[in-house]
Length: 453
Ligand SMILES: O=C[C@H](O)[C@H](O)COP(=O)(O)O
Ligand SMILES: C=C(OP(=O)(O)O)C(=O)O
Ligand SMILES: [Mn+2]
Image (cartoon, rainbow, N blue to C red; front, side, top):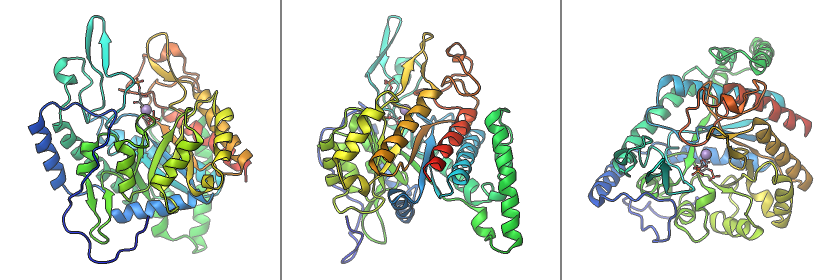
Protein backbone atom coordinates (compact mmCIF):
# COMPACT_ATOMS: atom_id res chain seq x y z
CA UNK A 1 0.00 0.00 0.00
CA UNK A 2 1.35 3.40 -0.80
CA UNK A 3 0.34 6.79 0.48
CA UNK A 4 2.25 8.61 -2.27
CA UNK A 5 0.03 10.56 -4.58
CA UNK A 6 0.80 11.19 -8.17
CA UNK A 7 -1.52 13.52 -9.99
CA UNK A 8 -4.67 15.18 -8.72
CA UNK A 9 -7.10 13.36 -6.40
CA UNK A 10 -9.92 11.57 -8.21
CA UNK A 11 -13.04 13.69 -8.36
CA UNK A 12 -16.24 12.52 -6.67
CA UNK A 13 -16.93 9.76 -4.23
CA UNK A 14 -17.88 6.98 -6.58
CA UNK A 15 -16.69 3.46 -5.82
CA UNK A 16 -17.21 0.28 -7.78
CA UNK A 17 -17.45 -2.28 -5.02
CA UNK A 18 -16.83 -5.83 -6.16
CA UNK A 19 -19.94 -8.00 -6.22
CA UNK A 20 -18.77 -10.73 -3.84
CA UNK A 21 -20.62 -12.94 -1.36
CA UNK A 22 -21.26 -11.07 1.89
CA UNK A 23 -22.17 -13.01 5.03
CA UNK A 24 -24.34 -11.79 7.92
CA UNK A 25 -26.02 -9.00 5.92
CA UNK A 26 -29.50 -7.62 6.70
CA UNK A 27 -32.39 -8.50 4.44
CA UNK A 28 -33.77 -4.98 4.15
CA UNK A 29 -36.76 -5.81 1.99
CA UNK A 30 -37.74 -2.27 1.07
CA UNK A 31 -35.34 -1.38 -1.79
CA UNK A 32 -36.52 2.24 -2.02
CA UNK A 33 -36.06 2.86 1.69
CA UNK A 34 -32.58 1.37 1.43
CA UNK A 35 -31.70 3.61 -1.50
CA UNK A 36 -32.94 6.68 0.42
CA UNK A 37 -30.98 5.76 3.56
CA UNK A 38 -27.77 5.12 1.62
CA UNK A 39 -28.14 8.39 -0.31
CA UNK A 40 -28.69 10.23 2.95
CA UNK A 41 -25.60 8.66 4.52
CA UNK A 42 -23.50 9.49 1.48
CA UNK A 43 -24.44 13.14 1.90
CA UNK A 44 -23.46 13.33 5.58
CA UNK A 45 -20.07 14.59 6.73
CA UNK A 46 -17.48 11.97 7.62
CA UNK A 47 -17.36 10.95 11.30
CA UNK A 48 -13.58 10.83 11.40
CA UNK A 49 -10.82 12.51 9.42
CA UNK A 50 -8.45 10.40 7.32
CA UNK A 51 -5.48 12.15 8.94
CA UNK A 52 -6.58 10.80 12.33
CA UNK A 53 -6.65 7.27 10.90
CA UNK A 54 -3.08 7.82 9.72
CA UNK A 55 -2.06 8.96 13.21
CA UNK A 56 -3.59 5.82 14.69
CA UNK A 57 -1.76 3.72 12.10
CA UNK A 58 1.50 5.26 13.34
CA UNK A 59 0.57 4.40 16.93
CA UNK A 60 -0.21 0.84 15.91
CA UNK A 61 3.13 0.68 14.13
CA UNK A 62 4.70 1.26 17.57
CA UNK A 63 2.58 -1.64 18.87
CA UNK A 64 3.90 -3.83 16.05
CA UNK A 65 7.47 -2.96 17.04
CA UNK A 66 6.80 -3.85 20.69
CA UNK A 67 7.05 -0.22 21.78
CA UNK A 68 3.42 0.31 22.82
CA UNK A 69 0.39 -1.63 24.05
CA UNK A 70 -3.15 -1.37 22.68
CA UNK A 71 -6.22 -1.14 24.89
CA UNK A 72 -9.42 -1.56 22.88
CA UNK A 73 -12.70 -1.82 24.74
CA UNK A 74 -16.39 -1.09 24.91
CA UNK A 75 -19.80 -2.65 24.48
CA UNK A 76 -20.46 -5.83 22.54
CA UNK A 77 -23.41 -3.99 21.00
CA UNK A 78 -24.02 -0.28 21.46
CA UNK A 79 -27.70 0.65 21.54
CA UNK A 80 -29.47 3.82 20.45
CA UNK A 81 -31.09 4.17 23.89
CA UNK A 82 -27.70 3.66 25.53
CA UNK A 83 -26.26 6.81 23.94
CA UNK A 84 -26.53 8.96 27.06
CA UNK A 85 -24.05 11.27 28.78
CA UNK A 86 -23.64 9.11 31.89
CA UNK A 87 -23.18 5.88 29.92
CA UNK A 88 -20.53 7.37 27.68
CA UNK A 89 -18.80 9.10 30.60
CA UNK A 90 -18.60 5.94 32.73
CA UNK A 91 -17.21 3.92 29.80
CA UNK A 92 -14.59 6.57 29.01
CA UNK A 93 -13.61 6.85 32.69
CA UNK A 94 -13.21 3.07 32.84
CA UNK A 95 -11.00 2.95 29.75
CA UNK A 96 -8.94 5.92 30.98
CA UNK A 97 -8.46 4.24 34.35
CA UNK A 98 -7.43 0.98 32.73
CA UNK A 99 -5.03 2.83 30.45
CA UNK A 100 -3.43 4.62 33.39
CA UNK A 101 -2.99 1.35 35.27
CA UNK A 102 -1.40 -0.25 32.21
CA UNK A 103 0.82 2.73 31.41
CA UNK A 104 1.99 3.04 35.00
CA UNK A 105 2.56 -0.69 35.40
CA UNK A 106 4.17 -1.34 32.07
CA UNK A 107 6.00 1.96 31.68
CA UNK A 108 5.10 2.17 28.02
CA UNK A 109 2.57 4.11 25.92
CA UNK A 110 -0.92 2.70 25.77
CA UNK A 111 -2.91 3.28 22.58
CA UNK A 112 -6.54 3.88 23.57
CA UNK A 113 -9.30 2.72 21.23
CA UNK A 114 -13.00 2.50 22.10
CA UNK A 115 -15.39 -0.08 20.70
CA UNK A 116 -17.84 2.75 20.22
CA UNK A 117 -19.51 5.24 17.91
CA UNK A 118 -20.37 2.56 15.34
CA UNK A 119 -20.53 -0.79 17.15
CA UNK A 120 -24.25 -1.22 16.45
CA UNK A 121 -24.41 -4.34 14.28
CA UNK A 122 -24.02 -7.99 15.27
CA UNK A 123 -23.27 -11.19 13.41
CA UNK A 124 -25.37 -14.02 14.86
CA UNK A 125 -25.04 -17.79 15.05
CA UNK A 126 -28.65 -18.16 14.02
CA UNK A 127 -30.87 -16.03 11.76
CA UNK A 128 -33.89 -16.80 13.93
CA UNK A 129 -34.83 -16.73 17.58
CA UNK A 130 -37.62 -18.83 19.07
CA UNK A 131 -39.39 -18.02 22.34
CA UNK A 132 -41.99 -20.53 23.38
CA UNK A 133 -43.83 -21.16 20.11
CA UNK A 134 -42.99 -17.89 18.37
CA UNK A 135 -40.06 -17.62 15.92
CA UNK A 136 -38.79 -14.24 14.72
CA UNK A 137 -35.63 -12.86 13.07
CA UNK A 138 -32.72 -12.72 15.52
CA UNK A 139 -31.68 -9.36 16.95
CA UNK A 140 -28.76 -8.11 14.82
CA UNK A 141 -27.97 -4.86 16.59
CA UNK A 142 -29.74 -1.50 16.58
CA UNK A 143 -28.28 -0.72 13.14
CA UNK A 144 -30.49 -3.46 11.70
CA UNK A 145 -33.50 -4.18 13.93
CA UNK A 146 -34.94 -3.70 17.43
CA UNK A 147 -34.45 -6.01 20.43
CA UNK A 148 -38.12 -6.14 21.37
CA UNK A 149 -39.55 -9.56 20.51
CA UNK A 150 -42.24 -8.46 18.06
CA UNK A 151 -42.41 -8.88 14.27
CA UNK A 152 -42.39 -5.08 13.83
CA UNK A 153 -39.27 -4.53 15.93
CA UNK A 154 -37.41 -7.48 14.46
CA UNK A 155 -37.99 -6.41 10.84
CA UNK A 156 -34.78 -5.10 9.23
CA UNK A 157 -35.13 -1.36 8.73
CA UNK A 158 -32.56 0.61 6.66
CA UNK A 159 -33.57 3.90 8.34
CA UNK A 160 -31.80 2.56 11.40
CA UNK A 161 -28.46 3.15 9.65
CA UNK A 162 -29.26 6.87 9.60
CA UNK A 163 -30.16 6.82 13.32
CA UNK A 164 -26.89 5.00 14.04
CA UNK A 165 -24.93 7.66 12.15
CA UNK A 166 -26.45 10.38 14.38
CA UNK A 167 -25.92 8.32 17.53
CA UNK A 168 -22.29 7.72 16.54
CA UNK A 169 -21.77 11.42 15.80
CA UNK A 170 -23.07 12.45 19.22
CA UNK A 171 -21.06 9.73 20.96
CA UNK A 172 -17.90 10.80 19.23
CA UNK A 173 -18.63 14.43 20.00
CA UNK A 174 -18.77 13.75 23.73
CA UNK A 175 -15.75 11.43 23.62
CA UNK A 176 -13.74 14.14 21.89
CA UNK A 177 -14.97 16.70 24.45
CA UNK A 178 -13.95 14.49 27.36
CA UNK A 179 -10.59 13.47 25.98
CA UNK A 180 -9.44 16.84 24.71
CA UNK A 181 -11.44 19.29 26.82
CA UNK A 182 -9.82 18.72 30.20
CA UNK A 183 -11.77 15.79 31.65
CA UNK A 184 -8.99 13.36 30.76
CA UNK A 185 -6.30 15.64 32.25
CA UNK A 186 -3.76 13.41 33.98
CA UNK A 187 -4.03 15.75 36.96
CA UNK A 188 -7.64 14.47 37.35
CA UNK A 189 -6.57 10.88 37.68
CA UNK A 190 -8.36 10.64 41.06
CA UNK A 191 -11.67 11.95 39.80
CA UNK A 192 -12.06 9.11 37.28
CA UNK A 193 -12.48 6.78 40.27
CA UNK A 194 -15.45 8.71 41.64
CA UNK A 195 -18.96 7.36 41.45
CA UNK A 196 -17.99 3.70 41.19
CA UNK A 197 -18.80 1.04 43.77
CA UNK A 198 -15.97 0.53 46.25
CA UNK A 199 -13.91 -2.63 45.81
CA UNK A 200 -10.32 -3.87 46.02
CA UNK A 201 -9.43 -2.67 42.52
CA UNK A 202 -10.79 0.83 43.27
CA UNK A 203 -8.71 1.03 46.47
CA UNK A 204 -5.62 -0.09 44.64
CA UNK A 205 -6.36 2.51 41.98
CA UNK A 206 -6.69 5.28 44.63
CA UNK A 207 -3.26 4.41 45.93
CA UNK A 208 -1.74 4.41 42.46
CA UNK A 209 -3.47 7.69 41.61
CA UNK A 210 -1.82 9.21 44.70
CA UNK A 211 1.59 8.15 43.40
CA UNK A 212 0.83 9.56 39.96
CA UNK A 213 -0.32 12.85 41.52
CA UNK A 214 2.95 13.21 43.36
CA UNK A 215 4.95 12.35 40.24
CA UNK A 216 3.00 14.87 38.14
CA UNK A 217 3.42 17.60 40.78
CA UNK A 218 7.13 16.87 40.83
CA UNK A 219 7.40 17.10 37.04
CA UNK A 220 5.37 20.32 36.97
CA UNK A 221 7.47 21.86 39.73
CA UNK A 222 10.60 20.88 37.81
CA UNK A 223 9.23 22.55 34.70
CA UNK A 224 9.45 19.26 32.78
CA UNK A 225 5.75 18.50 32.35
CA UNK A 226 4.01 20.11 29.40
CA UNK A 227 0.61 21.27 30.67
CA UNK A 228 -0.96 20.86 27.24
CA UNK A 229 0.32 17.28 26.92
CA UNK A 230 -1.12 16.40 30.33
CA UNK A 231 -4.47 17.89 29.50
CA UNK A 232 -5.52 15.68 26.61
CA UNK A 233 -5.38 12.06 25.58
CA UNK A 234 -5.54 10.59 22.11
CA UNK A 235 -8.57 8.39 21.86
CA UNK A 236 -9.75 6.56 18.76
CA UNK A 237 -13.01 4.91 17.71
CA UNK A 238 -13.47 1.42 16.30
CA UNK A 239 -16.14 -1.09 15.41
CA UNK A 240 -16.72 -4.24 13.40
CA UNK A 241 -17.28 -3.29 9.76
CA UNK A 242 -20.25 -5.60 9.29
CA UNK A 243 -23.15 -3.95 7.48
CA UNK A 244 -21.61 -3.10 4.14
CA UNK A 245 -24.41 -0.71 3.10
CA UNK A 246 -23.43 1.52 6.04
CA UNK A 247 -19.66 1.14 5.78
CA UNK A 248 -19.55 1.71 2.02
CA UNK A 249 -21.82 4.77 2.23
CA UNK A 250 -19.40 6.34 4.71
CA UNK A 251 -16.32 5.57 2.65
CA UNK A 252 -14.84 8.74 1.22
CA UNK A 253 -11.77 9.81 -0.66
CA UNK A 254 -9.38 11.80 1.45
CA UNK A 255 -9.44 15.30 -0.03
CA UNK A 256 -5.68 15.56 0.48
CA UNK A 257 -4.65 12.39 -1.29
CA UNK A 258 -7.64 10.95 -3.12
CA UNK A 259 -7.24 7.68 -1.20
CA UNK A 260 -10.35 5.93 0.14
CA UNK A 261 -10.95 5.78 3.91
CA UNK A 262 -13.87 4.36 5.81
CA UNK A 263 -14.84 7.47 7.74
CA UNK A 264 -17.30 5.69 10.06
CA UNK A 265 -14.47 5.00 12.52
CA UNK A 266 -10.71 5.22 12.88
CA UNK A 267 -10.09 1.49 13.13
CA UNK A 268 -12.42 -1.15 11.73
CA UNK A 269 -12.18 -4.89 11.94
CA UNK A 270 -13.63 -7.92 10.20
CA UNK A 271 -15.18 -10.50 12.51
CA UNK A 272 -14.53 -14.22 12.81
CA UNK A 273 -17.70 -15.08 10.89
CA UNK A 274 -17.10 -12.81 7.90
CA UNK A 275 -13.35 -13.11 7.28
CA UNK A 276 -13.66 -15.41 4.22
CA UNK A 277 -10.72 -14.53 2.01
CA UNK A 278 -12.75 -14.18 -1.17
CA UNK A 279 -15.75 -12.57 0.50
CA UNK A 280 -16.96 -8.99 0.43
CA UNK A 281 -15.78 -7.92 3.89
CA UNK A 282 -12.12 -8.72 3.30
CA UNK A 283 -12.36 -7.12 -0.14
CA UNK A 284 -13.91 -4.01 1.46
CA UNK A 285 -11.18 -3.51 4.07
CA UNK A 286 -8.51 -4.25 1.48
CA UNK A 287 -9.68 -1.13 -0.38
CA UNK A 288 -9.72 1.39 2.47
CA UNK A 289 -6.63 2.93 4.00
CA UNK A 290 -7.66 2.85 7.66
CA UNK A 291 -5.74 0.70 10.08
CA UNK A 292 -7.71 -2.54 10.10
CA UNK A 293 -8.11 -5.70 12.15
CA UNK A 294 -9.20 -9.27 11.50
CA UNK A 295 -10.41 -11.63 14.21
CA UNK A 296 -8.81 -15.07 14.30
CA UNK A 297 -10.67 -17.87 16.07
CA UNK A 298 -9.47 -21.39 16.89
CA UNK A 299 -9.88 -22.66 13.32
CA UNK A 300 -7.49 -20.07 11.84
CA UNK A 301 -4.63 -21.67 9.88
CA UNK A 302 -1.16 -20.62 8.73
CA UNK A 303 -2.58 -20.33 5.23
CA UNK A 304 -5.39 -18.03 6.41
CA UNK A 305 -2.89 -15.72 8.07
CA UNK A 306 -0.49 -15.62 5.13
CA UNK A 307 -3.23 -15.03 2.58
CA UNK A 308 -4.85 -12.32 4.71
CA UNK A 309 -1.52 -10.54 5.04
CA UNK A 310 -0.95 -10.84 1.30
CA UNK A 311 -4.31 -9.32 0.56
CA UNK A 312 -4.56 -6.69 3.29
CA UNK A 313 -0.99 -5.58 3.85
CA UNK A 314 0.96 -6.59 0.75
CA UNK A 315 3.57 -3.88 1.22
CA UNK A 316 4.08 -4.40 4.94
CA UNK A 317 2.89 -0.92 5.95
CA UNK A 318 3.66 -0.56 9.67
CA UNK A 319 0.46 -0.40 11.74
CA UNK A 320 -1.85 -1.28 8.85
CA UNK A 321 -2.92 -4.76 10.01
CA UNK A 322 -3.81 -6.14 13.43
CA UNK A 323 -4.81 -9.72 14.14
CA UNK A 324 -7.21 -10.06 17.06
CA UNK A 325 -6.98 -13.63 18.33
CA UNK A 326 -9.92 -15.15 20.21
CA UNK A 327 -9.08 -18.78 20.71
CA UNK A 328 -10.52 -19.53 24.16
CA UNK A 329 -8.62 -20.01 27.41
CA UNK A 330 -8.52 -23.79 26.98
CA UNK A 331 -7.06 -23.65 23.46
CA UNK A 332 -4.77 -20.66 23.18
CA UNK A 333 -1.66 -22.33 24.60
CA UNK A 334 -1.96 -25.16 22.08
CA UNK A 335 -3.05 -23.18 19.04
CA UNK A 336 -1.35 -19.78 19.11
CA UNK A 337 2.36 -20.70 19.41
CA UNK A 338 2.42 -22.99 16.34
CA UNK A 339 0.37 -20.47 14.36
CA UNK A 340 2.81 -17.66 15.18
CA UNK A 341 5.81 -19.84 14.45
CA UNK A 342 4.46 -21.16 11.19
CA UNK A 343 4.09 -17.73 9.58
CA UNK A 344 7.72 -16.78 10.25
CA UNK A 345 8.72 -13.16 9.73
CA UNK A 346 5.14 -12.19 8.90
CA UNK A 347 4.37 -12.52 12.62
CA UNK A 348 6.58 -9.47 13.19
CA UNK A 349 4.94 -7.42 10.43
CA UNK A 350 1.53 -7.13 12.10
CA UNK A 351 0.16 -6.31 15.56
CA UNK A 352 -1.25 -9.17 17.67
CA UNK A 353 -4.05 -8.39 20.10
CA UNK A 354 -5.92 -10.69 22.46
CA UNK A 355 -9.72 -10.78 22.58
CA UNK A 356 -10.22 -12.95 25.67
CA UNK A 357 -14.00 -12.67 25.52
CA UNK A 358 -15.40 -14.45 22.47
CA UNK A 359 -13.74 -17.83 22.97
CA UNK A 360 -15.00 -18.10 26.55
CA UNK A 361 -18.76 -17.64 26.36
CA UNK A 362 -21.18 -20.15 27.88
CA UNK A 363 -24.84 -20.17 28.85
CA UNK A 364 -25.74 -20.26 32.55
CA UNK A 365 -28.53 -22.49 33.85
CA UNK A 366 -30.67 -19.34 34.03
CA UNK A 367 -30.22 -18.94 30.26
CA UNK A 368 -27.84 -15.93 30.41
CA UNK A 369 -24.86 -15.80 28.05
CA UNK A 370 -21.90 -15.27 30.35
CA UNK A 371 -18.12 -15.55 30.76
CA UNK A 372 -15.92 -16.35 33.73
CA UNK A 373 -13.57 -13.54 34.70
CA UNK A 374 -10.94 -16.18 35.51
CA UNK A 375 -11.16 -17.65 31.97
CA UNK A 376 -10.80 -14.18 30.49
CA UNK A 377 -7.63 -13.58 32.53
CA UNK A 378 -6.37 -17.06 31.73
CA UNK A 379 -6.68 -16.45 28.00
CA UNK A 380 -4.69 -13.22 28.32
CA UNK A 381 -2.05 -15.11 30.34
CA UNK A 382 -1.91 -17.80 27.63
CA UNK A 383 -1.59 -15.05 25.01
CA UNK A 384 1.41 -13.54 26.82
CA UNK A 385 2.99 -16.99 27.26
CA UNK A 386 2.52 -17.83 23.58
CA UNK A 387 4.10 -14.59 22.34
CA UNK A 388 6.95 -14.80 24.81
CA UNK A 389 7.70 -18.38 23.79
CA UNK A 390 7.83 -17.46 20.11
CA UNK A 391 9.52 -14.06 20.46
CA UNK A 392 6.64 -11.95 19.14
CA UNK A 393 5.07 -9.03 20.96
CA UNK A 394 1.79 -9.45 22.90
CA UNK A 395 0.49 -6.16 21.58
CA UNK A 396 -2.72 -5.52 23.46
CA UNK A 397 -6.17 -6.51 24.60
CA UNK A 398 -9.61 -6.20 23.03
CA UNK A 399 -12.33 -6.35 25.67
CA UNK A 400 -16.12 -6.12 25.96
CA UNK A 401 -16.73 -3.87 28.94
CA UNK A 402 -18.93 -1.19 30.41
CA UNK A 403 -18.43 1.40 33.12
CA UNK A 404 -21.74 0.40 34.66
CA UNK A 405 -22.29 -1.96 37.57
CA UNK A 406 -23.79 -4.79 35.54
CA UNK A 407 -23.93 -8.50 36.41
CA UNK A 408 -23.03 -10.16 33.12
CA UNK A 409 -19.67 -11.92 33.65
CA UNK A 410 -19.15 -14.15 36.68
CA UNK A 411 -16.16 -14.21 39.04
CA UNK A 412 -13.61 -11.55 39.87
CA UNK A 413 -12.94 -10.25 43.35
CA UNK A 414 -16.65 -9.41 43.74
CA UNK A 415 -17.19 -13.19 43.32
CA UNK A 416 -20.21 -12.64 41.13
CA UNK A 417 -22.06 -15.93 40.96
CA UNK A 418 -24.15 -17.42 38.14
CA UNK A 419 -27.16 -17.07 40.42
CA UNK A 420 -26.61 -13.25 40.42
CA UNK A 421 -26.66 -12.81 36.66
CA UNK A 422 -30.30 -11.77 36.52
CA UNK A 423 -29.78 -8.82 38.89
CA UNK A 424 -28.50 -6.30 36.35
CA UNK A 425 -28.06 -8.16 33.09
CA UNK A 426 -28.33 -5.31 30.59
CA UNK A 427 -26.41 -6.32 27.47
CA UNK A 428 -28.43 -7.05 24.36
CA UNK A 429 -25.78 -9.38 22.98
CA UNK A 430 -22.60 -10.57 24.74
CA UNK A 431 -21.74 -10.23 28.45
CA UNK A 432 -19.39 -7.39 29.38
CA UNK A 433 -16.95 -6.94 32.23
CA UNK A 434 -18.34 -4.41 34.70
CA UNK A 435 -16.32 -1.50 36.05
CA UNK A 436 -14.80 -3.44 38.93
CA UNK A 437 -13.86 -6.42 36.74
CA UNK A 438 -12.40 -4.14 34.05
CA UNK A 439 -10.15 -2.35 36.51
CA UNK A 440 -9.13 -5.62 38.08
CA UNK A 441 -8.23 -6.93 34.67
CA UNK A 442 -6.06 -3.88 33.99
CA UNK A 443 -4.07 -4.55 37.17
CA UNK A 444 -3.56 -8.19 36.22
CA UNK A 445 -2.51 -7.37 32.67
CA UNK A 446 -0.17 -4.65 33.97
CA UNK A 447 1.53 -7.33 36.11
CA UNK A 448 1.90 -9.56 33.05
CA UNK A 449 3.50 -6.67 31.15
CA UNK A 450 5.77 -5.83 34.07
CA UNK A 451 6.85 -9.45 34.39
CA UNK A 452 8.17 -9.34 30.84
CA UNK A 453 10.21 -6.19 31.21
O1 LIG B 1 -20.60 -10.48 19.57
C1 LIG B 1 -20.41 -11.48 18.95
C2 LIG B 1 -21.47 -12.20 18.27
O2 LIG B 1 -22.39 -11.36 17.71
C3 LIG B 1 -22.13 -13.03 19.27
O3 LIG B 1 -21.17 -13.67 20.06
C4 LIG B 1 -22.99 -14.02 18.55
O4 LIG B 1 -23.75 -14.54 19.50
P1 LIG B 1 -24.84 -15.64 19.23
O5 LIG B 1 -24.12 -16.94 19.20
O6 LIG B 1 -25.73 -15.49 20.43
O7 LIG B 1 -25.55 -15.33 17.96
C1 LIG C 1 -18.74 -10.59 16.95
C2 LIG C 1 -17.67 -10.38 17.68
O1 LIG C 1 -16.60 -11.17 17.73
P1 LIG C 1 -16.13 -12.37 16.81
O2 LIG C 1 -16.17 -11.90 15.40
O3 LIG C 1 -14.72 -12.60 17.29
O4 LIG C 1 -17.02 -13.51 17.10
C3 LIG C 1 -17.52 -9.20 18.56
O5 LIG C 1 -16.39 -8.72 18.69
O6 LIG C 1 -18.51 -8.79 19.17
MN1 LIG D 1 -19.43 -9.70 21.21
